[in-house]
Length: 372
Ligand code: NAD
Image 1 (cartoon, rainbow, N blue to C red):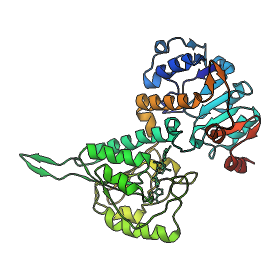
Image 2 (spheres, protein in one colour; image 1 turned 120 degrees about the vertical axis):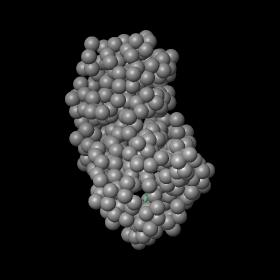
Image 3 (cartoon, rainbow, N blue to C red; image 1 turned 45 degrees about the horizontal axis):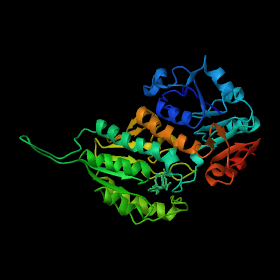
Image 4 (cartoon, rainbow, N blue to C red; image 1 turned 135 degrees about the vertical axis):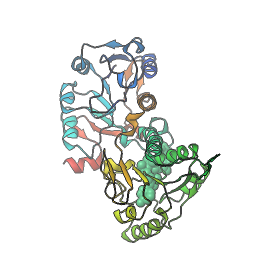
């Protein structure tokens, strides 16, 4: 089995799908590895570090030989056309955003695994790219907020008097939110968090933060949140508007799988916040949790609140994000790769449910309905 890894081509993407550590482990499982020269550059992995891997002349010639292609971002249509029929692709594939890509994968008879579709079961944890990358995003979002804030995060007792700690609110306490809470705590801020899943109260408190109770509970299936009803939304907003006035920094991370990000903070609520307050909206790329968020930009409201619409935060810590991502892919590939041979066990739900296309068919029902 020839496993290929290419340089990422999406602007700003510095993560890589294959690290030297994982290349070594794949070789130990009998895989042959072909890399595009310079592939690891964005995360400071030199070609020479990929010991025992073959460097192809260029991306195209590597692609044409791939039995398995590893990528962070989805392959382009051109790349899909260059792959052998029946090749395996393992990457983020964002099936809900690009029907034409899914069609191309199907028509080229590619076996495509969209890592976003991996079931969130206990056995899958070590393969869960959404979790590993969300942790990076939560961490980075807080650093960006701290950098932009006109205040210290920690309490300081100095000869010039006492400085009170910043008050930080984290909206949504999933993987990214909990990491944001932990990071803000480490920086010494006074942190509160909320979520609509009731089990998050204990998780937030175990990090030394306070659970902000807005009186709305909306647990959905599979450990995820469901969308709020209009009434619940109204209740959440009313309770939150009053609370928001007290915070110096807000980091928003709320998401509902397969949907636009829930709108949680309205422009009127922003208008009620303190001048100089900073909001970092991790959900900016999927529409944002804050009214007025713009992906990739900082918007300053009339009353002086900065709303920072971050994009692709995991790429801003490419070394550790790549290490975790590559290990996630290895753990997934390990299910199928033995003594150099690749055998896909379709009875394994992790294989079956993560599969987007196989043998000329779309295997993910929601995407099939979308693509037709
Ligand atoms: P996510 O990125 O889909 O959502 C982020 C958070 O936003 C979630 O906690 C969600 O409850 C919250 N949210 C949604 N709507 C909201 C609203 N209106 N107001 C406030 N908060 C709102 O979720 P995620 O971080 O990927 O994970 C969600 C859950 O899945 C967590 O419990 C996580 O621990 C669990 N999980 C389990 C595994 C596993 O066992 N393998 C792996 C990863 C995640």
